[in-house]
Image (cartoon, rainbow, N blue to C red; front, side, top):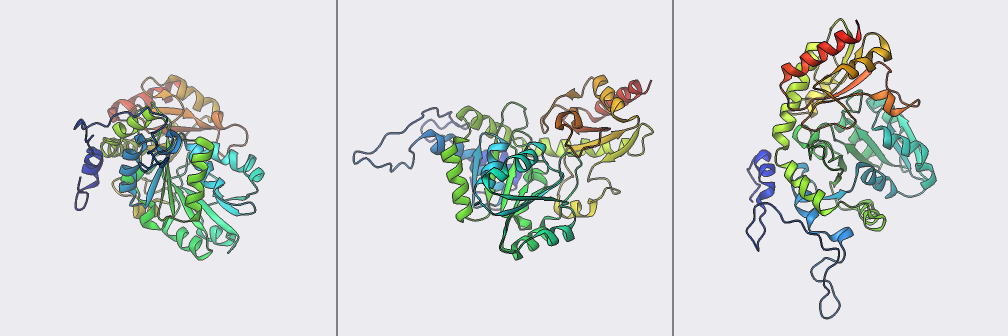
Length: 383
């Protein structure tokens, strides 16, 4: 498929227009072989040695995502944690890294609990404060700055371009977890990011039936080669069927993300100022901290994720989640079904999440039904 002058919606819908040359099938075959035949002289001119790192099932999904992100190369991993930790394991002992105080909790816990065992010097800061980033950077010592924007589950926004300028001046790399924004809304490389991560479990797949992660690099460099080696040697690669599922999910990415973003905005506007809701956290609200930055770096909407803080504290928040009918009480986000979660219960005592907060992942149901369901759940929680 020729992608020049073609809208990204078309690129994704046809998954780059790839076909199986032998059968002329539009959908890719599922490759399950774990090993590949050597040539007579014992070489591997096919480029494939072993499934762990040379599975042809990876290639279409990686190519589609790389096209969307305007990257140099993309790699699939078996999970978000496999990919994120590989990026940090690609560094060297003694390297200083910056990460946000508000971020995906599993990675935050790994950084604060295990990264020191790898010899990394980890510092958590308010990544939405450009001055704080500038003050924390150590030129020549800081090697990686990790940004998540919008950041789960408070949906704070980091200025990617401003942060990239500071990071590069200090001689470091900027990595952006863009799971919530997706390539539909934000293309971090265009704003100066060196690496872009997506939990493909979420919006890229969109059907809550696989775990996967992607990492895209702006350019080939020593760090990228080390990350590639970590994937091959530790073995955090995706299975063939999961790779096939991801290609299937990617085809409807633009439709799903735009629908979820529209729904989330309507829900946020409805409950902003609601008597049983003390605060709505959503970058699409004009009153939200970071809204102006979000307008600059998010196109076509502000994402399908929002949080509400309920009147009545923790007990009321848990009761609201317990009384929803359409909203499903489950971890994760970015699927076609709407999910609700009392996030502090999941993250534990070290979490920065307020106890009265409910995280909402808007799906593709009718927005009126979702609002009505939350209204009745709020009413029951305050009877």
